[in-house]
Image (cartoon, rainbow over all chains, first blue to last red; front, side):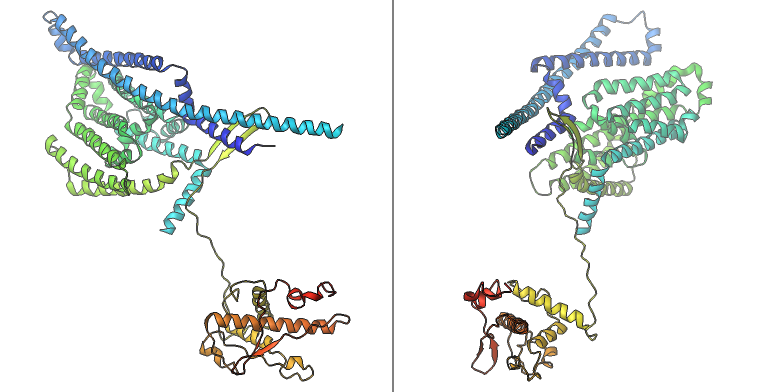
Length: 145
Length: 466
């Protein structure tokens, strides 16, 4: 016999899994600190790559000037400037990433809490169902005997 | 209002049934028009600019997640520009990469906005973007909207500097110059910054106002957002020293606001309206479940009304009898309403005829009792038929009518019983007269569920017919 309450709970769980659940379960693989660390590393890589592209495009933009003044440029100052901007941008992005991914982790943790509660209720329903089935079988055996 | 609710319910119903088809079709339409517009701006490759290629791209995009729509659109632009110049194609690709790495990777699911924004700007309706994003999105929607603005102005910068492929081929040695010109056009572009700023301001305003817990917060947020947008564009045009036609801008803003109102009205049901199809299993079963959310507005029920006969046209004998029987059954079943339907002149006549059916019949003594029907309604039309119109109105009229009909039914039953040999005949219903000499049947104190029980409870069990 189909347990209607169990079906309802399982349907809710399945809908959750289909939408937010997929992302939340990925997040749930990690502890909060590990998850944030991983995302920050990804952000650093992304920003670094993007920054390199920007630097490359700027170099292309000023290529004529750079070639003309290649011997007279203060490379140390230029390098420091590039590095300074890089650190500034990186710091901003790291702060943003820490805040954002902490918030996302907290949210997904809450949703997962509700999801696990529903799973617990499903387990209870299953146990009740199993118990009812066993009772029914016992009764049938008694009737037969 | 009911019609609008009905239309909304119908649309919701259709969306529930075909949510996948509708979403795919919407993505296809968006991508098709966006690519067609792009082909109109940078259509350097005739094969790719053709409708067939655009449809193919749009079809692929329709079946991909929204995050990959941007990728596909960028690939299309890249391939188009590759025909013109490798350097420019790579430059555009790099700009998109920067946008992705710095901004879009934080909002991967809002790729459709990046595609939609250039399309809306190119058709002269950029005002819809911040309003819609403010109502349906979050503050983070500023990022994809701004990226969309950059994408549009970048394509515009490319077309400003490359007019035709032939010109480009003639300037093959000056590719670097074109690259510098494109970047100059892109970066020194005050209208672009104004638009990005206005978008950001409007989105923030709408999101903040709609989050306030008050009545009509969504509607107010749209109105305020529209006002802020008009003001911001006017101030921005002054700062950026660009020319705008104020009347056109205001009109377009108002049209976009109306569109946002309509969309918001439908979205409130459509947001969660999509039916969910899930499958799972436990130890004993496989489940294939379709969970359809409830719709709050009910569609109006359609009632079919039979045409009533004209007043002058007399009812047929069968119809009159059917109506009279229905009225009697209604009263006998304890219905509080004396009649199942309004008493028509034909029905009233029929009832009175039933009550005094055999006035001329001298054979049966009991049937000679003349029952004077009370006047049910004080309508002068009925007065003509009455021999002695008793002026009774309101609930009393209904009560008396009920008593009269009950008496008629009982007398008929008695007649039937007397006709059947071996069946005991019941006493006629007791009569009583009021002070004025008008005759009525006595009404039982309690409404009997069964005639025999009410009249002769001691004979219960003796009556054969029971």
